[in-house]
Image (cartoon, rainbow, N blue to C red; front, top):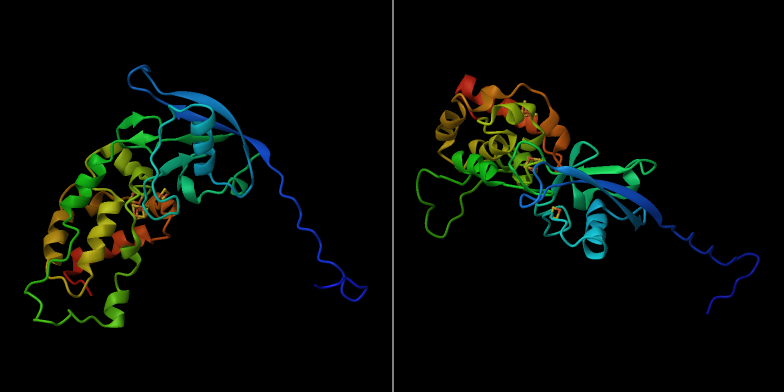
Amino acid sequence: MSTATLENPPAAAPEEIQSFTVTLIIRRFDPDVDAEPRWEDFDVEMFPTDRILDALHKIKWEQDGTLTFRRSCAHGICGSDAMRINGRNRLACKTLIKDLDISKPIYVEAIKGLPLEKDLVVDMDPFFASFREVQPFLMPGKPAEKNKERVQSVAERARFDDTTKCILCAACTSSCPVFWTDGQYFGPAAIVNAHRFIFDSRDDASQVRLDILNDQEGVWRCRTTFNCTEACPRGIQVTQAIAEVKQAMISGKVS
Ligand code: SF4
Ligand code: F3S
Ligand code: FES
């Protein structure tokens, strides 16, 4: 047992972390009752290191069980809880209360550009339809040799590493003004997932995907707004990936 002395003073007690009241203003919509979405305020007692997802759970469990939102992993992996928090697309499970301005209410609403179903839940079908259209899977020209891997150098693997990190949360696509107004544009997430295979040295269908993205709903609709890059919770250089796909179309090379 250690004894405190003048030379060896007792460790200071850790400072107690105080909880405080946070106001969340959530955009609600129940298609069975509401003609239009409406805003509703909730006061919740939270700690600075709690996340917006914790606040939503607290509201649902203690105040209003009808509050509807998606979440699964709660750790930034599944991509299911993208929402607009104070006007910016983020994952609720990765947004700490202390990183927001808690002197004001926190506004929470569904991501934009996709049909609203209920409260914070949107219909993701159009988003996944665009994703499927770019054929986001490996298409090698010939079968692998028996008992052999398809070998790839470190540099070849690094070429598309950034775009492998996508979790299909739709934060990018639903922050893109072209996607909001157009309704036809593939959107940045689909292009990111096309990029992931276009630049994979083991794949032989790059031209197929480039042809798909070269049509009028494809990459050329991007106006280099950068909202997608700012919104991506995985830090993917989305606008850069789109530029590389454009460049591959112009040059006819995927190096
Ligand atoms: Fe989400 Fe980023 Fe993938 Fe877009 S690119 S879907 S923001 S992880
Ligand atoms: Fe939209 Fe991103 Fe292009 S926000 S316009 S896809 S750079
Ligand atoms: Fe899975 Fe947030 S709940 S990413």
